[in-house]
Image (tube, rainbow, N blue to C red; front, top):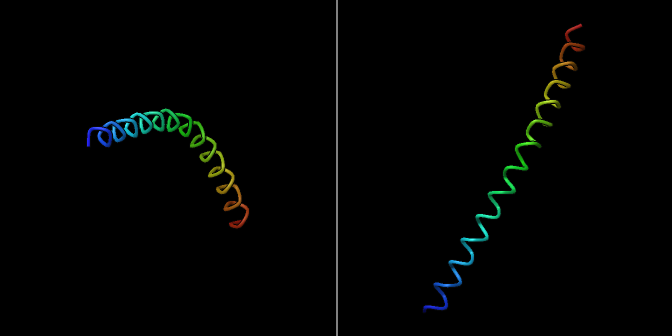
Length: 48
């Protein structure tokens, strides 16, 4: 039982490492905003 509890604690530490990866995803969100601007330009061409 104690070994199983220790194994769960190790998994929690791995989750904290995933949170650091989420910070890198924020930079990717900025790139998505640029793609939205390109879509707006296409909409203007359709209106013309």
